Length: 196
Image (cartoon, rainbow, N blue to C red; front, side):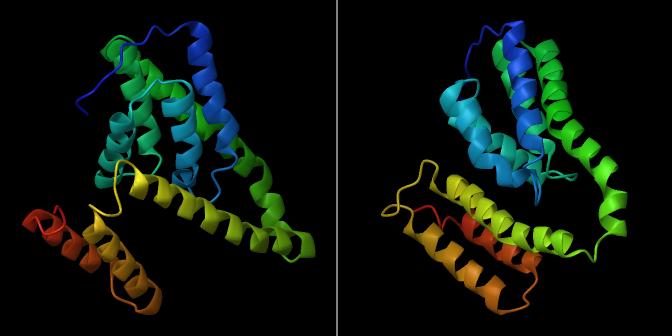
């Protein structure tokens, strides 16, 4: 995260940050990672509150750390706060982002969970659950594509694409444990074979 921004955030900006995460919270079916393309568009491209490097680093650090997947939202908020004026703003911004992403979906689950459990055999409930599968899969593919293509060149980074393709095929066709594949990827990266 070498490059940073200097932001002059108004109270309306802080409210818009909360409102954006609150508005996409309900769409986080399958987990918050499916929201990465929309979050990137809003924070990096539209508002310019984060750099591309800060966005990617927030995801990588959160995924490498123990805890829930949603922690990348707090790190993005933290970085926006740092860009806006320091550690006090970083904590405030992280709190705003986490409240925005967690409150609406938590309230929805609290309100509907019992009803869905009670009516799980209704055709409409089953159809809704089945219909969500392709939506979640396509959103995960979009998030993966965003991360895979950020600052890469197919010609230069072909070893990474080969490893990603082989790994995808192994996961799809076998029952090899993911940690084993992650260890192989880490060894290849550490050896320098993937950075040609």
